[in-house]
Image 1 (tube, rainbow, N blue to C red):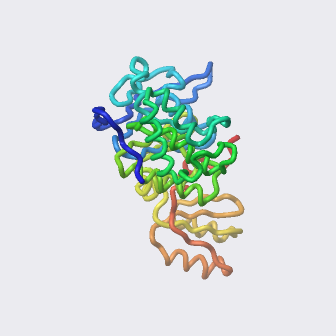
Image 2 (image 1 turned 90 degrees about the vertical axis):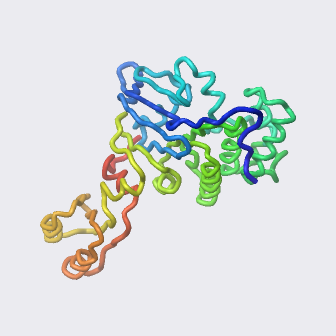
Length: 317
């Protein structure tokens, strides 16, 4: 079952860009968390914000939904100014935060019905919306269960269902599947794909590159509060990495010299060489024949390769 896209006479946003950020700045005392970034999320698309821990991605979306005030720049949602029109904006967005903010004293259904009161949704309509959303999220069989009895994946689906109770034009997701098992993650991906097909715009952050590649029409990668790249996942892979990656464990100095002579871009991690190349099976064959008798790995390039190449491989804590 699909969740209802609305009732009454409200017209859903049809402008070209649902979010417009210009020179967006966020400072905490002397620390600059978001450093004058500009981006536009198109209506009807899933727009992703990727970055290492502390890069500024969560801070950015918190400004978008009005939780954290800007320190500078301009930000419009639905062509409305976040500073002067934040009440109207909040009524038309759904937010799925990282934290589990469900009420443990209420049942699954009650969590949605109580949340609907914040949007002045009549009780009868709230019950209809809630049951429809629980059916859509495959939680209808746990309708009267206490929240504490739910698994982690069920709780995340319930938080997502709650964020849709007001039929939002824009759904904002902050790392929606972090900590979930693969089955739960794929269930949420399927629901998000269904929502996007219905025309709901999505703004999301994620640490999972597979998630970004599957869901995002376009994305930005940010680090230290700055945008490094922007584009479609496939185009970013082609532009910054190429089609294939060759991974070589325990490279010799002779092999290093050979790779340098080919002029292919590569990363030397000491214990491993990462070579970025187009469709060059002859290069792979030459390496395995002359330098790597035990073989090496050639695979398709991914968004994770782009992410690590641009932001580095060191731990961020």
